[in-house]
Image 1 (spheres, helix red, strand yellow):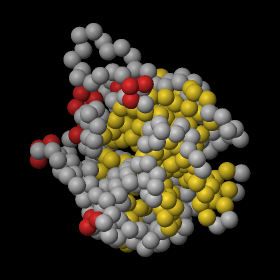
Image 2: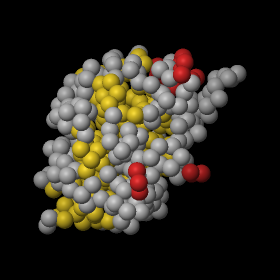
Image 3: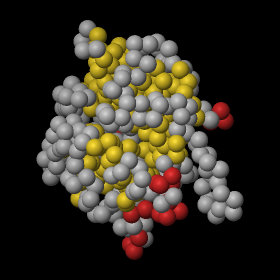
Amino acid sequence: MTERALLATRKGLFELTWQDGAWQLASPHFPGDPVSAVLHDPRDGSTYAALHLGHFGAKLHRRDAGSATWTEVGVPVYPAKPEGSDDAIDWSLKMIWTLAAGGADQPGVLWAGTLPGGLFRSSDRGASWQLVESLWNVPERTQWFGGGYDSPGIHSICVDPRDSASVLVAVSCGGVWLTSDGGATWRLRTKGMAAGYMPPELMEQGAAQDPHRIVRCAAQPDVLWCQHHSGIWRSTDNAATWEQVAAPLSSFGFAVAAHPHDGGSAWFVPATADEQRVPVDAALAVNRTDDGGATFETLRSGLPQQHCYDLVYRHALAVDRTGSTLLMGSTTGSVWTSGNGGKTWQTVTAHLPPIYATVLTEYD
């Protein structure tokens, strides 16, 4: 197997290939274009890249397995806002924030999370998309609001490997939602979460929660990890309840990676909250727990420890299917990898554009 990595950046999609004991960086695809999301579909080996082109809108491209050519496919399209609607949100696609493959028993099915908060489903490998109206029409959507962006957005989509009809999504800011019937109905799943930025009487309101990122343990699917604006939470019952855990340095951040086999293990990148959003004491670190959040180890070896102002976005920390190789990219264009679960890190490059997302995968 040849290990490869994908880096979605502000100025193109870069590929890394592991050759002769080192990572080799290739010239970018879509040079100069912001790539807001990237997906490698393990079911058929295809790769998807979403572009965020500002005035020219959002675009989506697919590259089939074994091909060097990208083909433009469809993008999500919002319906017209009903006449007389008092909805303050503009019903038009601003950005594709995340992409996810459907279940192994659903060839061709893709999910897309977008700004301004719509979830879309494709059954034909991205050629066409349908708004999941059941989620768009939940009464609580009128309470959703933007976090880092002006409008709310869906950034995390977790398909249950045991049941493709069970899908969990996270909204900033709008809470955590779960369907068990393929999207026909949705339930708000935020019990135990608390939003410290809200007035005390509204802190536990489900639609006010800002989960920055949610990931699932593939081998123990009931285990979910959440990096929230107000801390770190873990669920062991498929989001029915959440328990807060405390990490060293800071429990604020954006990125989280779950160990694919061990539900007790996860990685986080702590940052100084809100006004600053930089590493604590300008020294980059990764917090790892191996016991469900009871304790953490702060990992620094190989990471910059002076004058470091790199922020790691919510999709920019990836772990491979063994749980040993990690890939991390930052807002200043630096890329680090670890082959031992984060104990030591190596710099791949420090000169890329700001990195939005990283993906580790393997090709035959």
